Length: 76
Image (cartoon, rainbow, N blue to C red; front, side, top):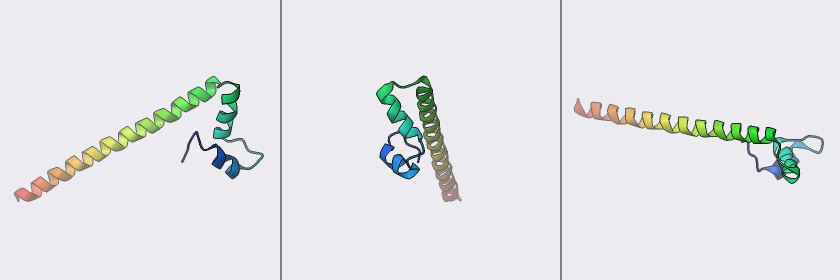
């Protein structure tokens, strides 16, 4: 999963020569968050929100279809 707060895991998994997104965000918090980090965080949160809403709508449609199929089967 992609997370903005997994600094410890990212630093161990990436190794000493790599700079991952959580490491960059943590270092920029101490010096001041850049507009690029703000924009990237906004995009990530928007994508996750759209995904959750889409999954919820698909689930509701599936449940409604299943109920309609059950009612149709009960009539016959």
